[in-house]
Length: 235
Image (tube, rainbow, N blue to C red; front, side, top):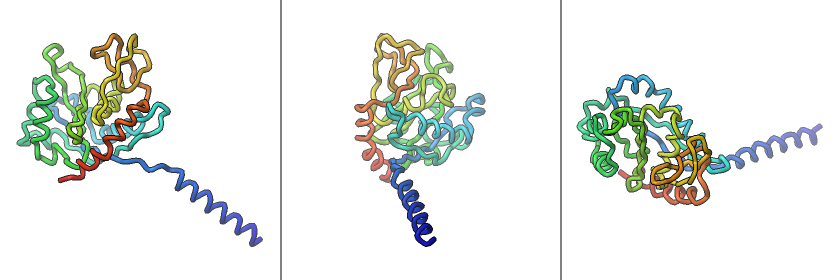
């Protein structure tokens, strides 16, 4: 009876120990969300629960080709438009205006902003905005991600919230971790393609962007992980 009891105890210990060591530890990045649009339709969908879901989307789809994780993301906080509309950061007023996206210009405004409700210096900043272009007006749906010298941020058009239109969350976060576009010649909008696929400068479509990051892309992401971690930990 004692032998059987001892064996059972050992078995439980082995199972428990195996379970602990079987779970890999991933670098985790906090995300601060800010809603940078006065558009009422955008504000209706850019809720606290949806911002938390955006993190779930990233943790589900920011993965390798075999669907295994690379890093993890964690919801930290959210600032809604009413929280930041009176901010002295020009970044807020420019983004919430009929102004086409300007990669370097907006990055300069972001870097100059010291309002902690708008920019959390210790997190990846994720902005929901209403994109504008001369051709499409406020029906412009382009989104953007920028590594920004290892202080990255993402600009997600509100019409692409909840993984709408070509897997935008993981694609833009890929840019935030230093990845460039990938050309998939001959791809159509219904083709399975790499997360970073794009029609820009390519004779194919961006496709569905439903194939995870390849080995080379994973290596690039992991190269920037410690650099971004260090930058976000700095004052």
